[in-house]
Image (tube, helix red, strand yellow):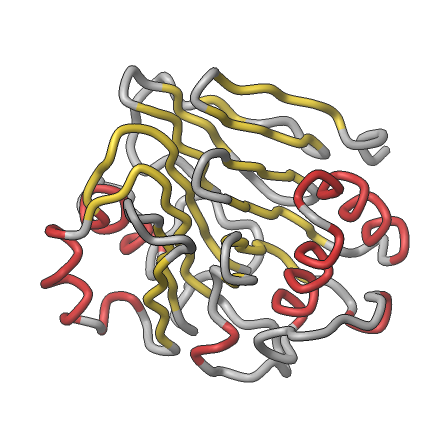
Length: 233
């Protein structure tokens, strides 16, 4: 349904993270290699990043395909950050195509992206969702409950909708959190930092797949992996 990535480490340009790798998020918008649901991600894109001296993240989102935005391509090489969340969107059938439906979503300090789908009827009422799409409602629920409850929230929603796919990526400027629930996620740990991505952006053998139904936490001190419930039979 979507492809997303996050980075925590030494500042890197948005172009180096999103546009330049051989299987970058740009390439994944039209030729993903591991996508299980859908074939292209042309229904919007977004990048959120943290900058020194700014209390919350900055965002750049669009309802257009990433490959069709030359303005971002011209500016991305000169924008750098040590904490980034980015996504390209493949809209669920029946969901609106609008900028506000593109991840990452924010509550003013946290960034969150959702790769997957969920039946909106199982989600509790939420306030201040950025859009009516399932991902925005799920993001608002996570914001209401806090990142420390991320695993519990995913397990609860997954139990209410057994067909849900709930791969989430979140950042608060100092750490990354991610869940795997029904879709792919890979991790790359380097001397410069850690990347989490729906699929690897290159063929570096250091990429590792994260098991399904896991919670990943990345901090400057390292990475931890915790199971979320039992894997599906």
